[in-house]
Image 1 (cartoon, rainbow, N blue to C red):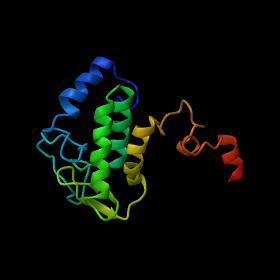
Image 2 (image 1 turned 60 degrees about the vertical axis):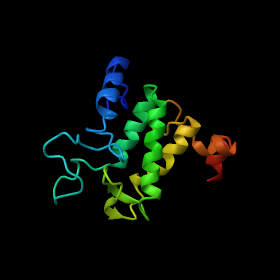
Image 3 (image 1 turned 45 degrees about the vertical axis):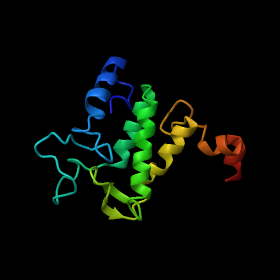
Image 4 (image 1 turned 90 degrees about the horizontal axis):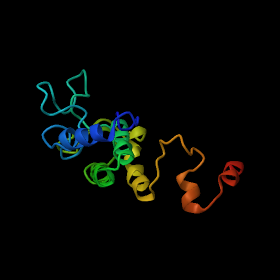
Length: 159
């Protein structure tokens, strides 16, 4: 999250990403990013009818991590993250789910959950277009205007 908020120095970002985020024994599991370090004693996947943030993979946090990686120059890591998450959402599961098992990629929680989990579809496109939908710098530039060549004003009047 500090990378998403641009709150880390480049040195801290490098250390956090290399020592912890990309550590396959902590957060970078088969379907990253785990919401809790696997090295923690109370880590688990799924839900025990209480906190389900002790290991599973969630779209909102993964999207912020994805954009944080890009903001600090970790483009290839962001690309790999987007590819793994899209593979999980499209190939491992017949429908979008609320959250996922970070070790197996199997969907958990609500089924047909197309709210924030739909971010997995857009992350790869954002990486490809070098676009950041979460940026406040240029809110009028939308992916559709870039792809279709439609000026923002015309698109807004048409709707």
